[in-house]
Length: 270
Image (cartoon, rainbow, N blue to C red; front, side, top):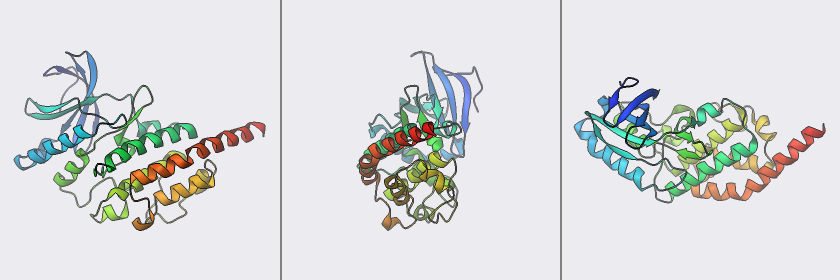
């Protein structure tokens, strides 16, 4: 546990941003570069001798994902007996942004950025395995970046839990220990549904889920069908990966935006 104003190598701790089962996250001031950064420090109980090699491999994996919508690592290494991952500091996390009203163009924009990131990863045979609004960071230019690629998989191997991922966004097959690219598709579909309706569907995710009428009020039929295929419980009927999902989204994107424009005009006239 680090304290505010504590000097930590070249960093000065500003405040603790988050605490999870895997790591602590701090906002810090880099006194050399004169910028604010985020420090992710895994819990000491997770960093045993047998885990160090795996952890370094996962950090290297993250470093190979070069995409504007994937959070990049500025640095990773040991500081005062702590393994520290240094990343750019976001202005907001999607889970907090979702507490406020989000227009359809904003939702479509964020969804497009998520899909671009996952498309890039899936083409390189990398599965995230823990997609959730807490791992989606928003920067000052409204750019969304997906965080914790690889780190999520490391946490799954080291935590003494019976499941992996976050339960609310977990696909059925991943809950049974068989994650695949389509598991990320399922998580993305649930996030899309939650951005539209402010609520997650409840297990067992039968179609139609609660509040689908809210989503239908914001989407054309093609958008509703895209949503259905994204959160299909039967993995064989779901988009197989984010690449295919992204292609489908780009095809309907103009219709999503034009539908919303017409909907707002009708609302204004009435």
